Image (cartoon, rainbow, N blue to C red; front, side, top):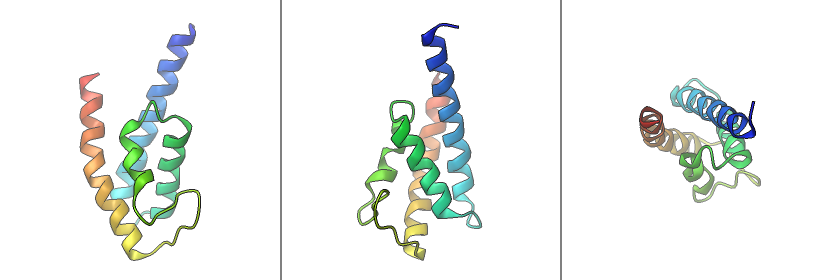
Length: 96
């Protein structure tokens, strides 16, 4: 398998995982902190594959690698942003 094929496979897996995490995060019963950290980790480790996740790392008052208070406001902001990101994220998949 060529390096280009391997890169494409890694990218596809990363994007699939992002869609799974975004979909799960929408559920009010899900662990918002764990899902947010998983998405941030995906973006941080492979941001070229999932540029749509960038807004999650730029929420004012939330420091993904620093102090993070898990309040109702945090959960609402992250879920609201997720609701905006998921349609754009999945529409990009349809175009590929």
